[in-house]
Image (tube, rainbow, N blue to C red; front, side, top):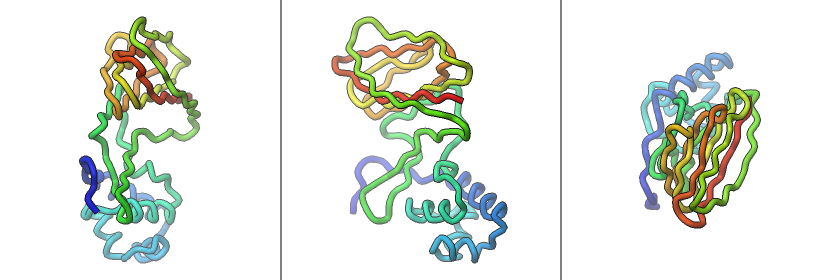
Length: 189
C-alpha cells in the first residue's frame, strides 16, 4: 500500500542504544528478548547495531517486552523552543496499514499535563504571564495560522505544525486567520 506524505527513517542510533541499554538492564540475552517480543534474533541484532527500518509493530513489541514506554525510543533531547512542522518529525510506519506514528513529545516522569482546545480569531493577541517554574506548553495547530511561543520570539505555525516552549515566561498565541484552532497541553513538573 502506498504511503501518503513523507515518511522519514526512524532515528536508528537512538533506537539501537535504547534497546541495548534496556535489554542489558533487564538482564536479557538477545535470544530471550527476541523470543519475548516475537521477533527473529537476527532482527533484534540488526536493530541493536543501528541497522534496518523497523516497523511500528516490531518496535512496540520490543518496548512491551522490555517494559519501556514507546516514546523513549524516539524522544530526542528538547531544545528551549521546539517546532515540528506538519511534514517533519520521526515517523514510524505500520507494516499492516497506511498509518504512521510521529512522536511530538514524551511526558517526562512525574509530570502532569492538562489538555485544551484553543479557538482563536485575529485581533488582539492572547498574552499569558509566566506560569509556575518548569511549565512547558505544547501547541499543535489544527486550523488557520498563528504566532505562538515566547512573547519576545514567537514562531508562526500552520495546520499540522507543533511547537513546545517554556510556559514559565511570558508567551503569546496570536491568530493570523479566522477560525484558528489548536490543541494546547500544559505540562507541569
